[in-house]
Length: 113
Length: 112
Image (cartoon, rainbow over all chains, first blue to last red; front, side, top):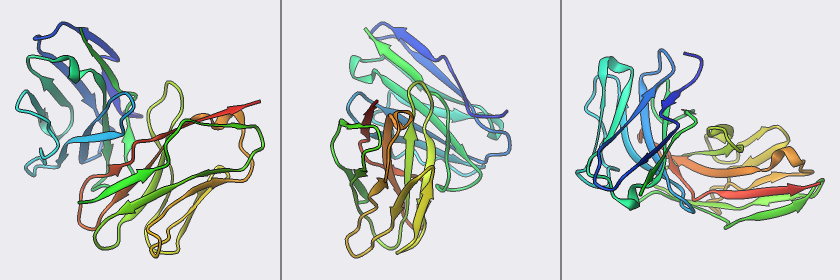
């Protein structure tokens, strides 16, 4: 596609529910990143996929968070048993390789009530 | 570990004022440095970058010089416009690393 597409753009859920956030990167971009942007905070790295290599999961805040990337393209970030502190904007980005120039999506705003 | 520290916002200026947003970093080796901008309702986009010491990145009238001696990458613009209102993020990518480390962001508001 022309840009990085994320869905849903907004998600309101109740505490304890599971949510899935989707990212469709730019075609041909081998690297895909998830970041979290909380109110008043910077961008927090969550996870990084590069081609067929094992993902870098070092930023995932707890085992309630997981992500997968199918076929080297679309990625899904799953948050299980959501908590209020999970409320944030979840940003996906892709690049041709490595951490040089990232193209970001518009984000998915998650609100946990 | 690697980290980026930006001046705290929000910053409010009048149109045509001079802008400086400070950014300092901690990193091993020779990182690449970036400024990303997030306009209201839009995703982050790269504003400028510098990949080695003394390099100057520039775009849309903004400039930043990679200063290794002071570990800084301050963003400057000589005359800001209302359309420059946005959140600005300083970031680094260290050698061999595959992810960007971001600062906390600085919200800039330009009044006419």
